[in-house]
Length: 148
Image (cartoon, rainbow, N blue to C red; front, side, top):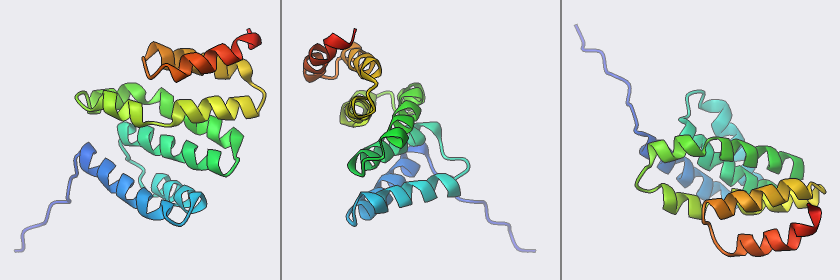
């Protein structure tokens, strides 16, 4: 009797590397291709780890901002930000570097500003500042201070 082969189980890090590699390849053809790849990834991977989803939503927000899909961008930013605790839990030693490389705060501020949600943009500035993501968020906050 033949021995049954076990399915390959990848680590969260390996899954993230696969998703980022596929995204890089798709992004060479433009943001529309990147979005198509990410949508298919979400549809085809029903058990995608939440830490990977956080990064994928971040990449999706970037592509949506590039194509002017502001409402969808806000949704992707919100999804990415909601999953940051899972990202930190899965990558405790790399979390800070990963967080600093994410575009969701920048794109969220941009999308909310484009949609006229200046209070929401201001809140994102303050959240980025609380995470110590850079002085430029303080400048953005200062420029949105009138919205209070």
